[in-house]
Length: 102
Image (tube, rainbow, N blue to C red; front, side, top):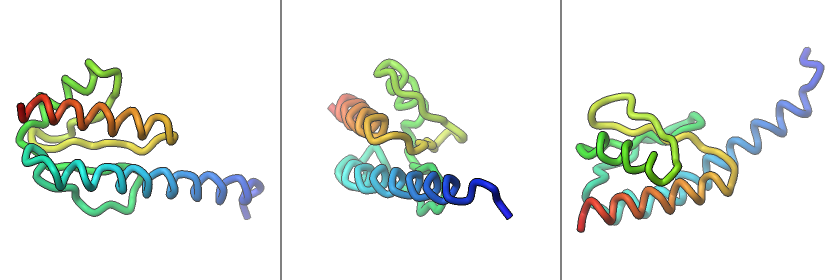
């Protein structure tokens, strides 16, 4: 039996909430910009987005001070974080995609 079960359950609940908020924020961005092809369903702590512009988005997100991963040439992995981190990530992603589509 876990000695810190309550803390573990609270942490899992917080991660699930954070992921729900991240996905809810990403969905309209993915839907509104052709650069982002689709977001794959996830039951993890990260969102996986398919895009042919992954290398460019990956680099430009770093310019905005946001670290994401590029696990494949055509994909981005965005981990959930705190509410503030998620908000910064969403704002940066939308700015980057707007710039690429301009």
